[in-house]
Picture (cartoon, rainbow, N blue to C red):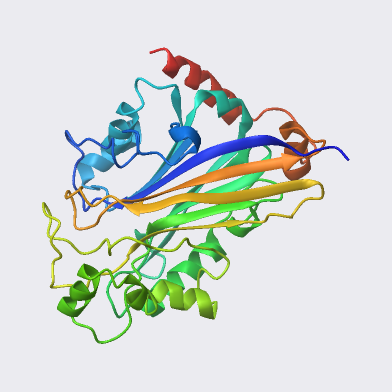
Length: 353
């Protein structure tokens, strides 16, 4: 029997943050990106791929006009942190204040193909993009992966609207790539953002804060709306989430780490995932979560950033990633897509600037 070998063994870093229309200015994101030696990747190495979703990015008319011609200031700020590292920007997509971006170590760029972006508006019945989702999908070492950054309906009593937002996104978010027309057609799915789920019950903001200070997270998470709708299958039922062991990430008084008790604290900012492990004969897909944490030292907005690291692995006895790409994505045209050629060229130029 031929032993299986890994054709991809990647550490993927996901970050989500509602930045509350604030500018990054001189903000250091070293901790938020775990570039300070706190990575949980094997041997504490820097992650292979970063995917970052931001919500409530400043969308004043002046900023929107500039963004037609250049990247958002947040993209520039995050890219600055990779200036001394061999990284390239793969793609970005923005829907009003919802922004997603992806950066990869340049060694992986030849293995990233069939890149597409998408967006779905859910605000005001699908007419406005203040709420909704943006995504980047691709063939990554031959497998189909979708990264979805979302911002769902706000406020405690808007659970029904959050469920409707989720269903609207999965029903209306489509791609042109053969065999991967919808989000859940993909072999790997990462869904993250300000999902805005709150805590059921009549607890006051003070009651919740008292339980949080005593680290009674389990009691509160039993009534967490996202956990409840996943169990019923009303939303996010096909996705998994690692156990939460950090304090609620909303709502804080800006500039502090004190809860704003005009709102009930909640775990609004979440990262979920899905892998179809045995979808292909003789190929094993796996996704192991290495970390799930908030970054409480950031006080820029009324939310705290949340990050997660994943070990993304593809094992096979006989296939290469090119074989897998043909199996998963081929429509009879096996040429390298133009988007990948452009990214590859850009990556090498960027690496030596």
